[in-house]
Length: 392
Image 1 (cartoon, rainbow, N blue to C red):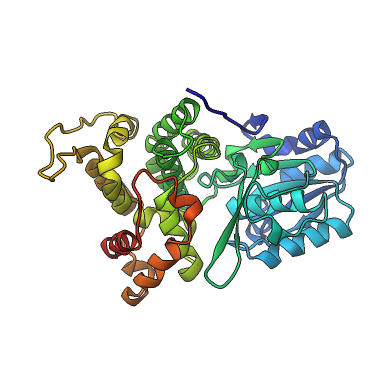
Image 2 (cartoon, helix red, strand yellow):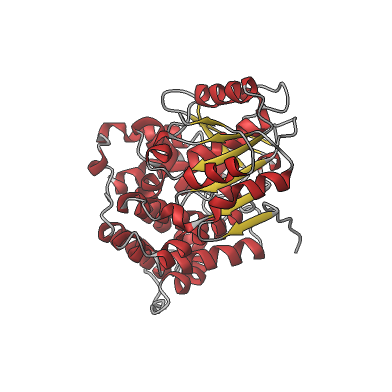
């Protein structure tokens, strides 16, 4: 067995750890940090302990707080221009996945003259980057641990930048920052993290024992904590489990990349601006069923981590190939039920998708070749359309 595994070199986990941000900045040797975040973070004063830390250490910083969900290209370019104007020499991503994705690109764009449009694709970054720290405030995207950044390139299209250059130097995990996360966001981002774990574990490319271990641990942490975190946002133990449970699959899918769930979710975000975690949740049960012929043996291994008290039914289906589809079906039913219990929408109809748009969604999903090649079962246009119809 041959494989490579790459990860952020340092992770600091501590309740109130964001108040020690200056220590991480000094350890990396930069003096004028550029913080990438969004207006909601400022409005809820989540940055205050971190800013106090920088001030006490005599470090002045600049803040870009205009990050948008599903950040467009001009969002990234505006932040880079501000960082350069203010003479910043390091970057801190502070917020959800969008802020951390923008922070990665800012760190790379600040250090050279390569254009953002030249970075799209796999291993297209030709520059180095300035120091980068990531501080997540949601538990779901895993962006803090990945070398991937997603940018909205048009009204309904997205492009990915995938490069080892985008791995951060340091991650700070502070569960206190997630205490005020609303139930709906807690639920959607939590399921998003579980999707990352499932797709890393079943990836057709680059699956490896370390990613598998991280995926299984993440599913165990989240499945045992997500209901408590949604019902009681102040449950610090549940919030801690969710935060670790989001980072672990981030590390996993940074090495064993995700597949069809994400490929079908991206057009929902691009065309209808449905939040990414919810988009994943909407198509997940149907992709699980679709993948069953090739992934049932892997779903059987995942089931005990998610439903430790369940037993996989051993009776075989009456399908012509004789595959056992029961683990996939149990997982599909589990996630459908979980979404309902957590107050999430479970059909495309509920989130305003018109039935006449399903063909366009299927066409857009076929453009996600970077993701589809990782799926355990090949997905055609007709397959994608059928999955969207089932989700409708």
